[in-house]
Image (cartoon, rainbow, N blue to C red):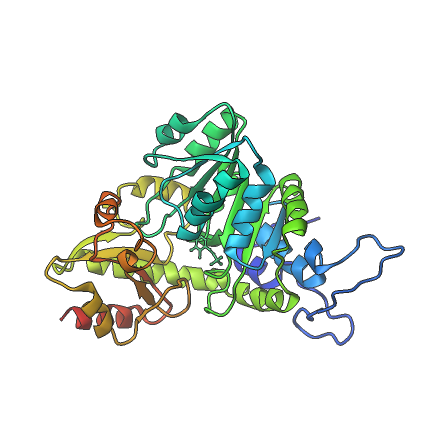
Length: 379
Ligand SMILES: *Cc1c(COP(=O)(O)O)cnc(C)c1O
């Protein structure tokens, strides 16, 4: 009999390799790239995604996502590109929501036309915006919620229902929520993808990605993955397993800290806007509440016009201006100079991304210290 375990327990124990040799309390690392071939149940090989340490990650992530199966990749983009190419071919059409991660956007813009894959971006995030883009040859709908950098919310179940009705496969980039705050398969999504470089790792020292879904869909992605070769090394699997042990604990604290900072910044007259799905003032707070188990550690805010956001970032003493996110340490970034630098000022304005918009990855420091740093920089 299998007993359904709590998420903290799953994070710590699920999939762990028993150390038969010495009885050590953690999974041993098996670095072998060569395994027996004759008379074995499966042929193990790193690029077949089935080494012992890879299987630990698959088992843990599948359990956290309430999925039948999962796979570990060498980066979030390896997971995203492999999943898309597994289900799309020449002549197919795919719908992307209009706010997606910069790397995913580049993949679509630069490569899809060359492979004869048609695509469209929605004009908004309501379900009707997705419906508007459906064509006879639409095979995949791809969403990302909460989105980067404005923490916009897409109604996951509504989009999944729409896609089901039309026999279209659905994928979600679930990175910002983490599997603790959002389990999209429960809402009808087919494939959930993460940049494990972010919350699953959590310590800014791993590059990895994961994909979760039904056994059938994951098998299809795995067969594509064997050819593209984006597998995660066993040593990185070990590090990622170590990180995931504290994932549930970390996410609880990220949620608490980010809600506190969002609430406090909302009251600050030097800040004109705060974007956080946990705020009642967020446009889609009710949808977020219905589909998320927690609101996450990411938020954005806009400084009043008289501020220079570059000067503000330089005045921060603890919070680091930094490219990545989701670490134990708080980091901040100005999207107009980074992820959205290639857009014109007008294009940025249309998307609601002003020069004074800052995206904050709220870390696990004492929340009063994070707030104090922001307040002293504003002064
Ligand atoms: C970072 C990120 C990715 C890409 O992941 P890599 O590990 O950098 O390849 C994809 N989606 C989101 C939302 C991200 O934040």
